[in-house]
Image (cartoon, rainbow, N blue to C red; front, side, top):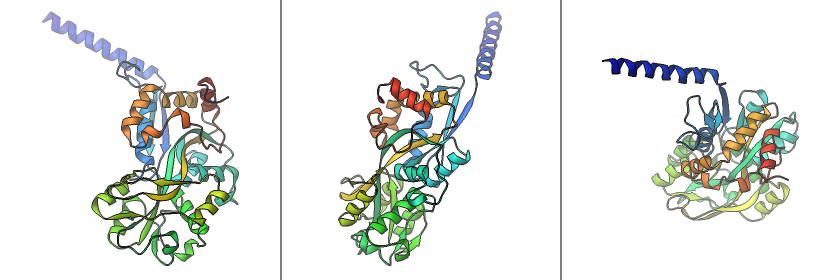
Length: 334
């Protein structure tokens, strides 16, 4: 009986100690704007949020616990995509977000597709993450075999506010068309692929790192076809906009679907200049530690391509002071 009472007393003291430690530790919340839940940004954002978080009471790094930032709880937030995320960062609605490198550069400089808008001069980069490919998708048996064949067709170009919407317009322009030359539909993710399966649209654009969830599901349920984006239009696009590069989506990136030539842009992680330097330094450090490496490698197919070696690739927006400090200390930035 005495031992039981003693054990209860010891347990209560330990519990109070943990609670006291948790309450004494400063708690910070940090949001990451991503994209639609069936695209690549959202699951990758979840992996990164998990990697940089370390709630009060967590086990120590290296001892079965998180190697994130002490007292930080990060969360991946679904959004409409690149433009939406940048607007949310600049307005203070979100702490950070993912965006295509081209969209971010135009927002920062107030040029390109953002000409006439107030330049987002306080936008800052945390890291370059992975390559995103422009997917032009239809079904086998369709008479669409090139970008030119989209004229007059019902095509989903995602919602205004997404990077896909911006890039679809640029690709059409490079091939001598505009959005007025197609029957524009503004569907997102699974809604777009479902419309394609049901014959409500003839094709759709998606800009995402392959394999992206919405298209994995489509390929498993229907005879999906990737339409090549190639030729003089691509040469014009890549020469005019340095953020685009000629690339390809390999065979069987999606079940039973052959290789397709296309173009790609970079997916990068941004924040606001006002975010605390020490916090962003610690977040960047947590992103690139060995424990995060393991989480990235198993968390998503694109995770293994997110590496320190490419963390500064294709950056057109200045680094946040905290991220810059980390990269200099790590020897990645001279």
